[in-house]
Amino acid sequence: MFGKLLIANRGEIAVRVIRACRELDIASVAVYSELDRDAMHVRLADEAFALGGQTAAESYLNTEAILDVIARCGADAVHPGYGFYSENADFARAITERGVTFVGPPPEAIEVMGDKISARLAAERSGVAGVPGTTEVIASTDEVAAFGDEHGYPVAIKAAYGGGGRGMKVVGSADEIEAALASAQREAEAFFGRGECYMERYLTWPRHIEMQIIADHHGNAVWLGERDCSAQRRHQKLVEESPAPLLDDAVRKAMGDAAVAVARGCSYTNAGTVEFLYQDGEFFYLEMNTRLQVEHPVTEMVTGIDLVREQIRVAAGEPLSFTQSEVTSVGHAIEARINAEDPAGGRFLPSPGSLTSLVVPDGFGVRWDGGYEAGDTVSQYYDNLIGKLVVWGSDRPTAIGRMQRALSELSVGGVATTAAAHARIMASEDFQAGIHSTKWVEERLDLSGVTGKTDAEPPAAPDGDDMARVRRDVVVEVDGKRFSVSAWVPETAPAAKAANTAARPRRASGGASAGAGTGQVTVPMQGTIVKILVEVGQEVTGGEGVVVLEAMKMENSINADRSGTVTEVKVEPGDTVGAGDVVVVIS
Image 1 (cartoon, one colour):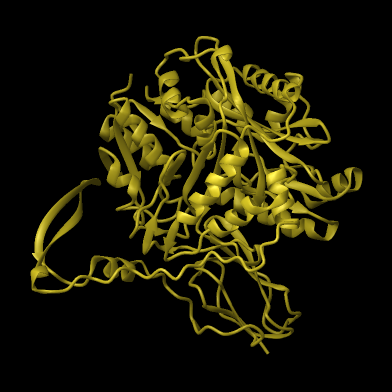
Image 2 (tube, one colour):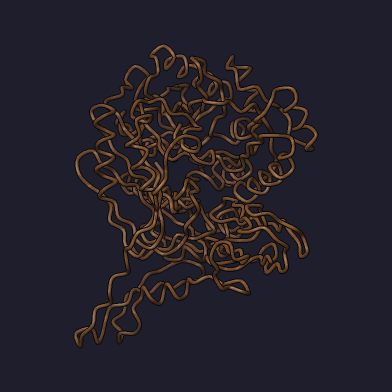
């Protein structure tokens, strides 16, 4: 087994891996950006090293900085988590070439399956059919138009080296192609470091069902049951459950066998997920994620198998601790992703900020996998997942009821969250009947009156002479390595207040807020301007996009609040703006 393992990630997945290491008596090493200097995963790890920078590209996607930390700390294994470098063959190869174990598949398997185009070809060679699509990188908008003419619209443009809905845009007609392709390429570049895209037919009412597989270095490969991930928005999952409702056992077995065939076809080892679209009794291969999935806890809850622990054991050369015949599924599990987003009106707008309070539910069959605690900040530069609320029940109705109870106990202050949307999903007759699809949240779910905002306020600072001297936990860095020390010092401003002040983003010029219909177009959240869609003197209509704002790796069109003439554009691409900042003026 390993002596020291570095986690090349952040947030709740880094916390999850750190806890598994502690149970296996493996020393854990965290890495962090400037913004994550005192993040939860940094506080929990045995050691922590600074990468520098703020954005993902400057920190968690900085290969040389991570390799330098590996050399300095003496780690003999690296767990990539998910996102960032988890499906990057070059990163995996750079790790293994230094004699360090990569807790994941071999680079060759990542190259085949991490590239969604070559993955389609590999699946076809294994006898598993995919959704009709292309097997070459999109070179021009004309290619998308030709595909749409042949197969019909809508067409899905997808990141060739991505997953999780990032870098995916749906084109409803020919006149949407140019903007959709450019947006997909920007998101793919920002989140995965590569902007190549491909396309495929977009099914009209499918369910998204995926198979968890794991394979060792001794020729053993098994599937651990399926997860239904059909409750989505923006092609990103909100709710996952296992087993999938209303799925015939024969289809379930055929899907599991297909998943194992795909894995064997590329000499896959470690944990992975083979994703399928299911519609009208047929299933189509979608893609393989060569990593641990965000929703892995629901599989753990019904099978009793610790996937992260098993990942580490397999990477260390040990055989799987179970066979296919020993895998059983008991009861039903549901996971709700609690993101820093406001679901009001179905918009799911990112809501970065500091968590002034966080109370998580407890009780029989309830699990919380979180990456933040009260006082921490959810940054605009990273994914907005605060934590995952997971419940288990003896059957699906029991699990749904338990999730409803758990959501009623969850309290998050300081940012808007998706919790209220999850409550609406759980109460829906469609969801309870299991007849929802990947389009259901956006097209049919009634989210009127739902808001992710809370009235929670930061706790008042204590006062009195007994607080004349207080303990302050101070973080210092010595040659880039993080140390925590404590000191009793005269009381100054409350730490939370100081932290909030330091974290306040720079506001763009002309930061006055204005109401709807005034011609003062404001942004609803903190983020970065990535594209200007209008110019001074241009005529616009109400609802027309004027700028594109990136927040938490998602692009959002900021629209004109009235019709008129653009008289001023107050921002440029690359500018950081805060909620309420005026970006365009219309007269």
